[in-house]
Image (tube, rainbow over all chains, first blue to last red; front, side, top):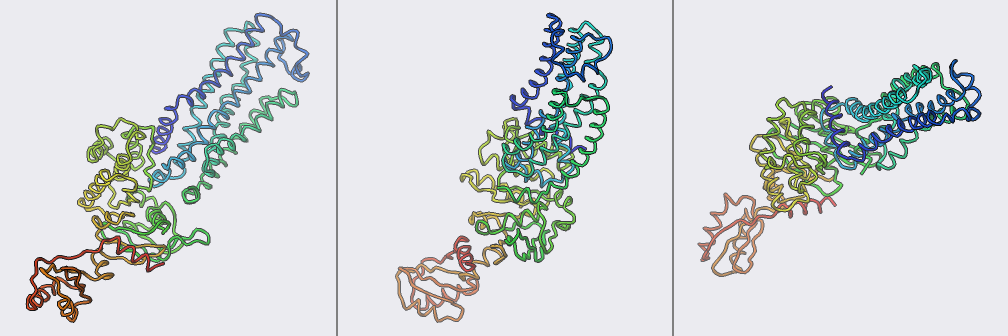
Length: 263
Length: 303
């Protein structure tokens, strides 16, 4: 446990020395929190959302909670898309930290002395995973908290607020988000341990976002709608995938290959 | 402390280390010499459990490579070919990280000791990236020693250092030797090997020869003694060359160069004969072949 803590502290000490990395971690959740709040503010000021109900997929109109007007329903629909983005954040934010984690140690030649210590592969990978995932999860939750508090302040109708902060979305952000972060980080570390160039690691690691983009555009286009069942199912599948990814990551982390194949 | 039997490492069709038999005693400084690509780093990596052997066995500090790797990693220190410090962290932070990973008990005390020992105390809060090459190398050696390993592997410790920094590093190695640690030293610096090592092994995929520097010199070139004479005389060389214990004798200006196996025993005989033959001897000295000459001769023989 001590060694995992040491790896996390080491990673953070290195990563957070770079102010741009720190900025990129904070900036995206902040933007994702501010944009829907601005939208809610504009809708409240203009009441213009009533005119746009026709822009909304019919299925969503049917799913709209009772007691909401068409305009309020449109507000919920539009802003919910951003809640979906909060699920995407823990997937995106840690990629550059995780992608650099092993290949960075390779390029600075610090991997060999590190692997010469009595640290196990599992300790090293868990340390690296947590070091990349925790800031992403914390930043996402921080952004979501700003969004939730802002929604409380800006929206008059408590029914709209309840719809925006529906338990399904809370589950999505609090459960699926961290699980996605672990998936993304493990994938990025796996890639990072098998390439020689940090840029290649980042490019390849970004592939992990694709499935969530499918969900995002599916929801926007009305192809399907995310509901509690979908979120729970996604959570269960992600637990299994994360578990498998950690096992695969440890198995594929061949110290010898990593040390001897790259120059 | 280190014993290998037929230790072999292959990467696909390429054999990096072939059937290496070594036995290194406790407290010994062992120099591992060889040209680039000879397999020295691969050997060090195997002996520090960073990579596994393809065949053969190796015991390090009583633990078997490939079976007790964690124990080996705990009990050896390694200075890798490049220091590999975390450049944007301070020297102290770098050492703290490794002290935790090596499960050091008194972390502040140990770090304090090594920073002072290597003259880095004043710069302990500075980022390692701001250090000179010599300071980084010393910091890397300190890192290798934090857990007080009895065996230390040093891969090219003075490579790329200026003479002053090299000297600092050499002094540090001598200090380790004084402490009775076993040192496995990979180097290209033959003068360094000559000064520091009790024994050296010349290696090129396989071990070509292993002995003390003195004995290697003597085996390859014999020992050469120079008799400085007041005036030269070719007949003196002919007389000495006929002696049964002399391999070769030749005259060069006012000097008589005599090659023999055991000068300690036979020098007095030669002095006596030369004086008897009328020579005026000014002084007598031994001509040492450099380790570089020994090494080059050996490597040429392999090629």
